[in-house]
Length: 186
Image 1 (spheres, rainbow, N blue to C red):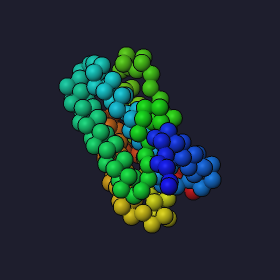
Image 2: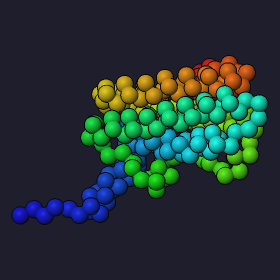
Image 3: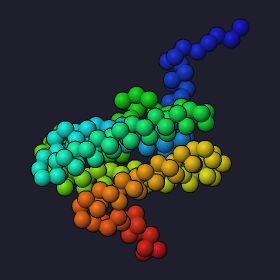
């Protein structure tokens, strides 16, 4: 008779598998854990900025930040559920999200000027977009069309949000975008 594994044993197997993937051949699901980690960090940062933004653009930026954190939450759920539907086990705890996030947060950011907060959000969206592009390419190579489509839609959301926030800052959509500057040099 085969004995069921304990939750701890199942978790250990999952973590061992993820470590193996991260150290051998990375896949789209592994990169998606970084995207989910970033989205988790953005949840906190977008709320912080929404609560503490001040100045002449308070009303418009306060509303936009709320719109962004609501959309962020939808993408958080959509991407995780797409991974589950594809047979993967996405990160699902604060400890995992902190491990996988490539974004940072700072309690002192609540004292930033509105424009500085906006610049930080743009940079965080760009960083998340870089992981998303990488995951899209891997999903395509893996033949995971559904995950690829989900990530393409998420990238479109990030691109549009970056464009709007850049416009708020009086900049062009791709201005100061290292990812596109590097492509221009190739």
